[in-house]
Image (tube, rainbow, N blue to C red; front, side, top):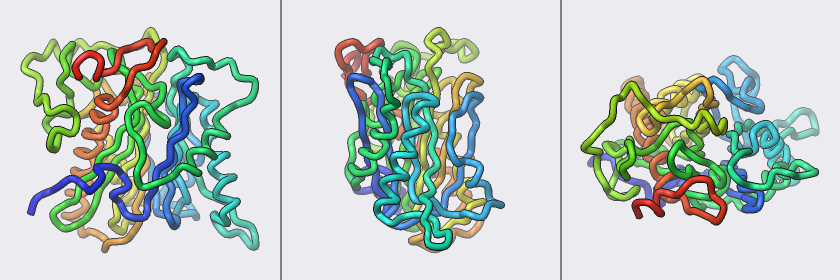
Length: 330
């Protein structure tokens, strides 16, 4: 039996994980939260030159805390880092967190993307992201919206609206891998001016249109970017139900970055803050060395699919600075 899509084709096909979105259409921005029914092991790897993060240092393999309660993806640039504070407040109310004596401290790493120049009204008097973070946590469910939702609400690529994407795969041995990504890339998820996605070779079924691979490719050394807009960064999470150490989660996040490179051209640039968290729930046995290699490859494939699904599912709204894929090709 070969690899197959999970029941939802979402990261929540990894049992025990839920995702919540919150967005403000006036702001044209939002927050996405991944939360576990119980704490899960996590790692992180950053390959972009302009990251914005919270509590990523504690995910290093030599740190005391090995598990986290939630992971946060947010718009809003540095302002969006406050979304994790709202999530932490909500988790504290539930009695969640790392125990220090009789105190519990929720561990909530987060990352942000830049969507401050996307046409939304950013003239706030009080940072809205803490409230959006708490609302996203409250909305957490196994089923959630992709496209123009959550952290992908105001996301863009060079030529089309970006968005929030997710995908999953169940490997022949039964291990599930899922990806969640907010696509706000400096480059493009599609080839040239056509509808075909860079990730087309990895598509399963017709999950992002079934257009196949492009027939014509421009000079690969000449790529379009949105440098003039100064609003970039793709941030994501790769998750599995396998048992992994924190070091192995870090390696899984590193491997999943190949999915960025397969789904976005260019990727990992100086002006992107490209980052991937990895999460392992530990519901299935630890993989041997060979299985770890295949798990990393699967993570990259699933991440590339999630990127294409984000752009394919995005919806346009009045005042948008770019069309959606559905407007041009749907």
